[in-house]
Image (cartoon, rainbow, N blue to C red; front, side, top):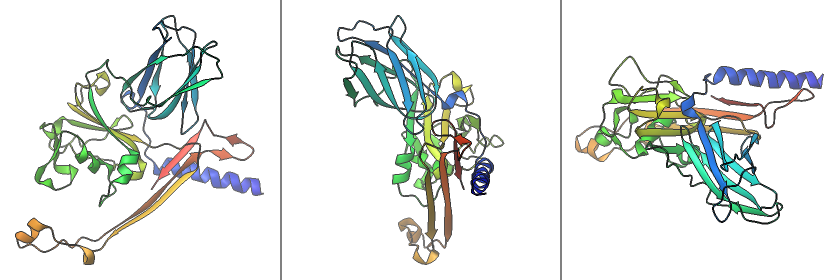
Length: 312
């Protein structure tokens, strides 16, 4: 009886997650490519080395062997932090910590040192990936940055005003009236998990999304302001890509409540100078998120394989 209860509870949680989170296909613009070349200390290429890439959050792994040119490539990778492990008999094992961002091509050049395979060399500078094969100019804001900045709303789109090249008219602090690199707003294309989310009905409303970009549901936002790649499909000179969170190997939850009461509002300098009263805005914003591996006792252990995420 207890087993049936567990199954019913977890099944309900999965169904609720599917209902509460918008379904989206993983488009090519929201994946990344991680490649590299493995050489010895003299610069000679090393074929036959095993390269294993492990997603730090989900523990999902994939492996490849370097070809005759000592190179490897992992296309279609999801956004996140990874540990790259390179092994070959006769050489020390190399561990590299990297983070890939949406719509990027990342290259790692690794030199293996002669030694026992049990010896490990940790490359701490692996997060500084080389992107010399594209003239694309992209700025990225990740979830850690978003969580640390104080804002009076829970809309991730409004964090774009902190990116280079974004101009907010009148300094209002709202992204709705902003432009990028001086271009008109009809040149801005906003996607969520690869699906266009812009207001295509109005040409002057580029900084608006039909589906809200809720703060706790966003893993990363990337803005490409110059020479976008072929994955942009010619939809706009400026590409804004939101990548939503996914569940990980750990059960994580967050509950929040943000309150603004008119009694505690103060008047801005220019508003007071114009003889206008202080704003009478009262806002109550609350919600939460939960995510983790899908585990059904006796039937399914989704750690490293299947995950759920819900934000409401």
